[in-house]
Length: 157
Image 1 (cartoon, rainbow, N blue to C red):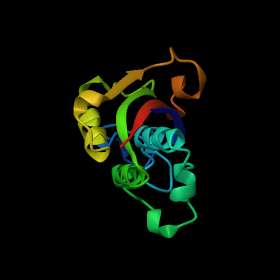
Image 2: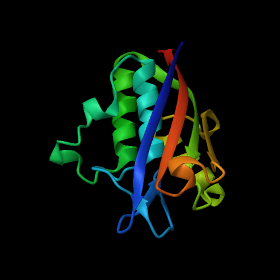
Image 3: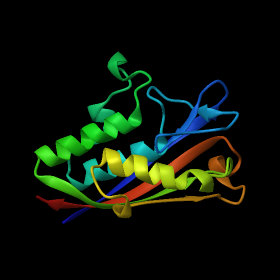
Image 4: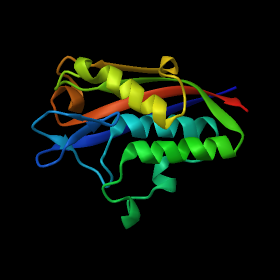
């Protein structure tokens, strides 16, 4: 067994969709990034890659490569999972937390879990997603951005 941790953050801006865990969350702002800027999917991908000592998503899917402009981060996560499987690992479980003052994410959590579990080829029972505010503190608390942390366990196949 191996354990990994992932973290991602993106700035909130007008004129972009807010995509979290593959869910288009209704909000007046979205996350700025080269891909769809899904911080949750990115944190999960980095946790998995870290557990396998396979680098990070910035290395695999660089923002200098136009092939990934506007990319669906769930597809990138599925590619990470395929690479993990090819290296002899499978996802054991994932526990992720989104740091977001607004909007409230509770109505969307189950769909995020389902989307991420499908991309990681695991049962939804192995995918935990939580959301928290930061009581108005820091860049997430003031609404400047959204961050996500993820930890995972991977196992040899």
